[in-house]
View 1 (cartoon, rainbow, N blue to C red):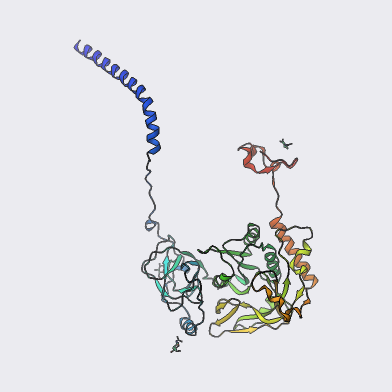
View 2: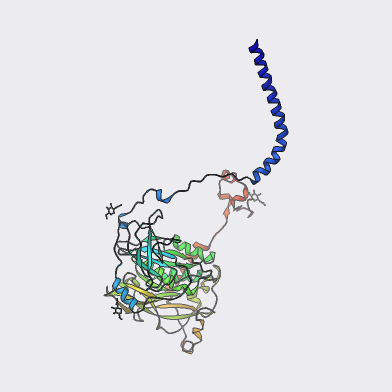
Length: 474
Ligand SMILES: *[C@@H]1O[C@H](CO)[C@@H](O)[C@H](O)[C@H]1NC(C)=O
Ligand SMILES: *[C@@H]1O[C@H](CO)[C@@H](O)[C@H](O)[C@H]1NC(C)=O
Ligand SMILES: *[C@@H]1O[C@H](CO)[C@@H](O)[C@H](O)[C@H]1NC(C)=O
């Protein structure tokens, strides 16, 4: 009985407790939600995050071609002699950040191209990083900037990323990947290092004409360089050349808001080292300049060039471009718009403005389109005017030194000149084919999408148009 009474008593106590807490809960609940809203709007919940320590990543796989450490760089004494003659330096952009743009590993060294010029009497340090972006401890190499914005660094086994700093151990802000140029032979026989593309004028027409022209000359690879950015219309064309395996587009960004002709040497230097051992020959021209071979095709001619020639120079003639480039491709009347039919007023050929075809593994010290240094045993050669020349479709509109055509020497000697009809026709076909491929675009038709896919999402997501009546699926 006592047990029973005790049991009832306990049940009642529990019941009372439940009722009171329910009432309390109900009562408090109203107050608590208000309080809760306020509380949670101010309260910040903290999730613990486990960051990865790069030091504890799996060790990098080092391919045998990259498992090489060398004490020093090649041709050190040759370069010292050039420096001694005060060659290969360019004082400019004094407050620019010391930041790498690109880096390439060759058999005997690594070269880092930077966005700054520092005189070669100042020490700089190459700093190496593995595939995990972890610095290879104790491997820094002391070097200097030469030529121009480039720094030669000794090779380090397992180096995948690199930078250059002024002191041996300062914190590193920028690194770039090291591009493999340890190749048994060049990938391309001849490529074009195309002068920088920048500015507001839409340059697609110049790009497509010059590129297709050079493809017909037997040059199938192009190194394009964009400073900052180009208009999206032009970018489509560059992307297409890259997509079709004809080009590598390099975009150079620095801290400067505007990059234009002043940075031309940066493109020259980057392209020179990018092409070294990747292309046997490079033609260094701007986007408005086209190599014209007049006696025999380019490859046949190059086979006649002695092996000890490091660079050859072509003379050039200028064709006046008097109007702006068209902003978009319109197939109707296009054949009258292309530069090689539209412009014919040409000055006589001269060696005043030479354009160079060079071997980047045998030369060094490229100042714009001019080579001033070769490795021992290599020489330069001048190409006779009858063999070929560079045709320069130079604008007379406001631009760099656009007053060239005002000179009496030029105006008195202008004549009508164009390329032979068979070549012009081939070039026209190639240009139009490429432009149609790139710029002839259409809407997606809803009819070409299976109905069950059209029912999966809200209509506005499909961006399609009914072919039957031209209305948008919305
Ligand atoms: C790299 O080379 C060293 C000798 O120089 C050798 O001991 C090592 O096994 C090599 N590593 C790889 C990944 O090939
Ligand atoms: C640099 O020039 C000086 C004198 O003009 C000469 O003594 C020195 O040997 C030269 N150094 C090199 C590396 O050519
Ligand atoms: C256009 O055609 C589609 C498919 O036949 C139809 O669903 C749509 O209602 C039509 N729109 C108009 C405005 O006629």
